Length: 306
Image 1 (cartoon, rainbow, N blue to C red):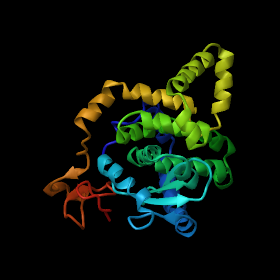
Image 2: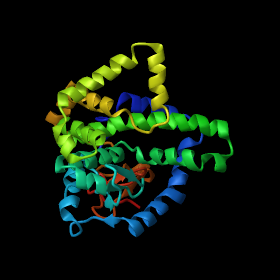
Image 3: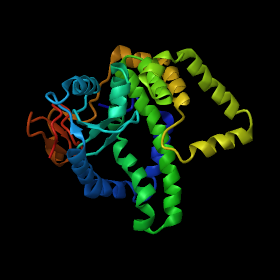
């Protein structure tokens, strides 16, 4: 499916800036192919529980309906022992989503569904490859590239984009969850850390808190600088701000139109390749349909393309 329905303006702008860095996208793809994809596969299969229709199906079965609604192939789903309420997505060629035991043990089904939808949003919006580079520049970048000033600049440019990307994924979560409430509830889970407290949180007061944060942080240049000082080294936006942002988007005409008309993506679908440009297309080995040569999955049946 297309990501244009969900991409937050700041996400699009920040990623455009990153792509303008010479060689950045090529380096990212090479890093994903040589290191990330293989490392993640080994780590997941060796240390996490792979979920399926026969392995914790009550949890796994939350995923396929979301993928069907978003028109994407079903990624692998894993459970990881971690008491924090969290989830993350890795892998560009073979995407996989990891849920923590803290999320599963402390959150109700609607929140888990919203979180899975959020992670699928990173896949839909093609964030995963660039998110891998955040880890790269904060761990190995200085040692491998030996260009501290360059990696310093890229680190903070990447972190800024990474924060912006979360707003786009939140939009996907709201779309598959039927509105902003499960996403706001997820933010409540993050700040409370338990299902018991989460259910007691006053939604309206929580959103008023977000408004108060904006007013206070924008009230002076000094407050604004202090706010950025707290934000600059993080890879996620402020939790209250995310809650307010998703409520605002779900009240927009774009969201209402999306819910009414649904999504369509014909960007990669081709019924038959033109005779003189067949090299630009490849044929699906399963359904025998055609897709652009750059496509990873068949737009007709979702099978992986060779």
